[in-house]
Amino acid sequence: MPIGITDEHDELRLSVRRWVEARCDPSVTRAALDAEDDTLPPFWDDLAAQGTLAIHLSEEHGGQGAGLLELAVVLEELARAAAPGPWAGTMVAAAVVARLADPTQAKALLPGLADGSVPVAVVVPVGRPDGHHRS
Image 1 (cartoon, rainbow, N blue to C red):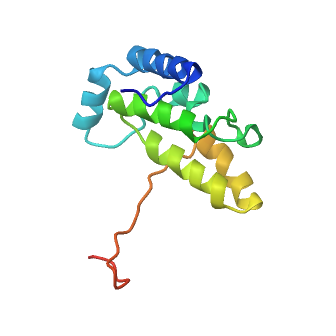
Image 2: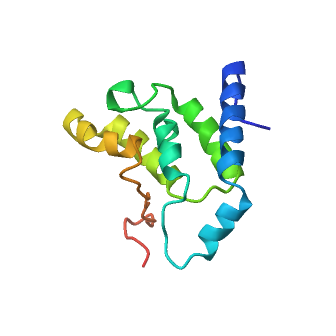
């Protein structure tokens, strides 16, 4: 069952699904898996231009001003298609920066995350209860 819970969320889900189907058929994912080097997927610039990477960010930072539920709808559709690229890390990093960074940091970091020029991966260290990290 899709995560969208209102008519607007369902419209967003369908819009993203149509976009993904037009730009990320299974051959795009297969090519990314078979590639020797990691590169941005061919649809990356269009994904950013659509505002998808920044749907959850304020307009002040290059976003669309939606919330985390709308972000979840977009993430669900990209994941459903197994779309390659650092979209999840970029969107999550933007959400964390928007929430936790001071205004100067946010102003410096968010525009690049929003427009796709600064794709990122999120790394979460796994720690043990005694505070030491696994090696």
